[in-house]
Length: 223
Image (cartoon, rainbow, N blue to C red):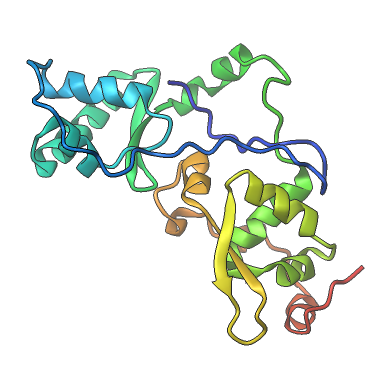
């Protein structure tokens, strides 16, 4: 049930071939058999979300439990508020179009202590920088990402794609280059509901940024 919102990957800067396990949600449900007598609705929702490995949409929960979607959505919101008011060690959050349990932010230090060092390896600095460029400039080509960073990012882009954080977003109509965007899994791992929740970059930028746009427009990679 615990899920720290760290981004985890491998230490290799460009040739990392580790594959993050991106869970897949249930597809179209078959005709469901008649349900036996069930616990109350809140208990049923908790039981399902406890075993879910990715956010579950309210409409799917309603379908499984044969209850109106509005009723399920309202109870999910009430349950999330109740957990927060009670100061539980976990939150129920609506993330990336669905609901899932997460450990509470204040509990992160003890969760990190529990997780043995090295059990999960973090994204390299190069991968984090590349992922940031994609997140804020998407849809974006690999050449443009490389231009922003000033180094070739092909290997890192492959790693991010393998880990399910970045995906193909079609091609540029002018150049034919493959474009990339972040995935729902990216939002889930950062604990964001949408890309609109990404923090503003302005406070972190230097007073002057020279040469980036010109280099990007020409497709150049600065040394």
